[in-house]
Image 1: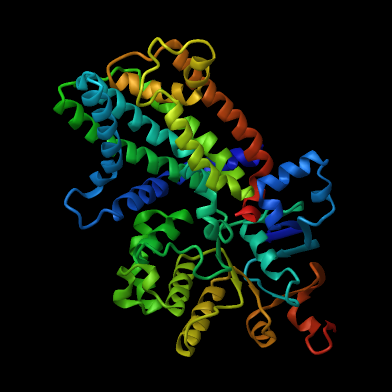
Image 2 (image 1 turned 90 degrees about the vertical axis):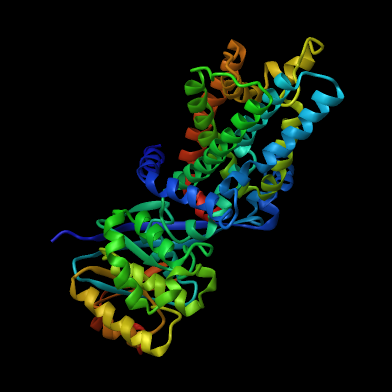
Length: 261
Length: 249
C-alpha cells in the first residue's frame, strides 16, 4: 500500500515531464499542416456532423439543439473512452521503458490521461465554433469545474486498472476498443432516452450506466444545464469504485507490471 | 562510512507467462476447473532468479558481476535499478541511479536525440536548465553532431549507444549500472568511453558492471560478485578470486 502511494507521489512530481510528453506526442503528428493540432478534432466533427445530419435534417429535428447535444456527447465520450481504448495500452506501449527504468508506473497513466485531456481541449474549441455556427451557443455552467475532476479521476483510476488487466491478459487489449464502441451506441450519447424507455431498458442504458453519468457531468454543464442528481450519483460512484479498484489492484500487483508487459 | 548500495537477503523469482496463461479464455477455463492447469506449473512458470544475495557497496566501489548465461546478472542489475522489486530481503540504494542495461530501449524513436536527452534528464529528476546546459557536452562526447536534431529512429545502433552512454555518464549518476559494457560503438569510441569511465570512477561513485570479460573486470573493478544459478558464490575483492580455477584464492 505504501509503495503504491510512493509511486503516486513520484508520478505526480514528474508532472512537467508528462505534460510536456503528452503535448509533444499530440502536436508532433500534425506538424507541417495548416490547421495543425486542430486536426485532432477531425474525427469528432465528422461523426457528430453525420449523426446531426441524420437526426436533424432527415428526421426533421432542430439542428440548434441536436448538434450541440450530439457533439457535446461525443466530445465527452471521446475523452472518457480513454479508460477502454488508450488506457488498455498505457503499460503495454511503454513496455520497453518499463523493463529498463524504474520510473513510477503512475507516470504512464498520467501521460495518457493528459493526452486525452489535451485532445478534449482541442475538441472543445471546435465544439464552440460549431455550436456558434448553428446558433446554439450557451454559457457553460460552473458545474463543469466539478465534473471534470470527477471524470479525470475516474480515468486515472480505472485507466490504471484496465491497463494492468490488459497487460496481464492480452485479449483485453483488443477486446476493450470494441467494448467502447458498444457502450458508445448503447449510451444516450448521440440520442436521447426520451420517454419511450422505461423499466429495464432505461436502467441498462442510463439509470445504472456509469458512462452515461460521466458523459452527462461534462456535457450538461457545457450546454449550460445542470446534470441531474442521478448522473452525479453515477459519476461519483464510478470515481469512488475506481479509487477502490486502483487501491486494490495497484498496491497488490504493481510490482508485477514489468513481468507482464 | 555508510554504504551506497546495500543488498540484504535478496530473493526474487519471476513469473513467465505462456501464451495460454496470457489468454483470458484459458484463465477463465482454469478457474472453472479449480485452477489446476495453472498450478501445475505448465503455464505460469516461476523462475527462481536470485536467492540469498547480500552485499554492500561503498563510495568508489566498482563491482564486477560474473556468472554463466542465466546466472542472474541482468536480473540483479534490474533489481538494483528498481525495475524489479525483490520478493524477500531488501535493497537500498542511496543516490541517483543511471542504468545502461538495455541500450536503446528507453529511447523514444520518434523524438529527436535532443528531445530524448531532455526526457531522460527530466525522468531522472534533473531541472531543465541543468540539462540544457549539459547538452553541448553530451553532443560533443557522443559525436552525434547534426544528428542530435534528427529522430532517433534514423540513428544506427552505435549512435544510439553513444547517445545513451553520453547521457548516462554526463548526468553524473551516483550509481551507474552497466550490462556488458557498451555493446555497440566503434573502436575509437570504446577508448573514449573507457576514458570517460575512468573519469567518472575517479569521482568516487559506485559502478556495477555485469560482463563475461574477466580482463575488463580485473582492470576496472575492485570488487567482484560471482553468481551461479542465482546464488551468490563469492563476493569480495577482485584479487581474492582466481579466475582460472573459478574459486576463491
